Image (tube, rainbow over all chains, first blue to last red; front, side, top):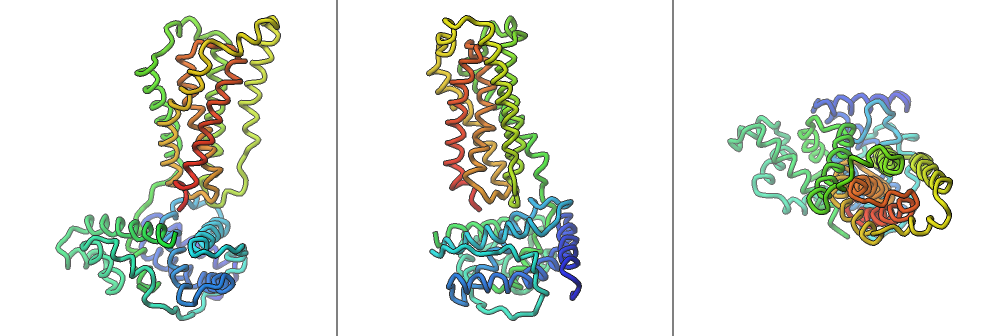
Length: 188
Length: 210
């Protein structure tokens, strides 16, 4: 955890590579480490843009959704840094623009200066995402709730809702796509 | 939903995702096929295709379209990636050289009094409107493929998509058009393709944002 910067980038790259091969555990670890590393960067950018503290976590979540939606565009043989940086910069500027803030933010240091993952406690438990949950169908809502809040596996969720695992996966995938779209079209 | 809960959701969606590499080859083939089919059912192949197929002017026309298509395919792949630092615009010199060489040959082979009539051709306006029409199906296909990527330069990406689609549309149109002079092609085909490129850029400003 406290290795050098280069080690951390390589570790994240290994995790994401495994995740792209379908390894859910590696993907969870990637998202956890990545969001911890990203939180201070997003926060300082948000403060400079004059966003309320309550919105910082929303921006972070939106960046995570974007990384998720576009993770297949990382070429696994290439370094992770430039790719992550480009996504984060694009997405943060996009969220600021939609919130009516226009500032140039130096995000160059996302990877160059990747902070050691600290356990900074996140604020705002009731963020934008909760509002967008209304974009989901009842089934999708149940599935997302089961997987997110109750941290149930796909199998447990399928069992509980008497669905096949495949159907749960498809519904979850579509639910994430709707949430991402709801975010994108909001505030614009 | 807090971020940990979001991570629960996202990591449950860790399926193998499609790779971008092959979809570009499919885009190129499908795009050309769509333009070609639209051409054959609406305006048909030129009847003397077999007689002209080995003439240098006809081949130059095809070479221009195909080289532009391939070059813009390379640029489309580059600009579709978020970290696209540099797009190889210099590749554009390849179709340009093809066009200049063909025009130069025409200058040498044809007396000056013929230059103007050849450049104006017999149905310039039709060509000008039909190349964009034939380019619309490939443009739709190309933009959908690009949406699958993650460009951070939507307007540029759209212009490149338009260039690629315009080249495919022009190549299909070349199989119908009987104005073979490189002068005609250099002028009207270029304008037609440029229009598609502009259209692509306009659409992409909205469509390729993510």
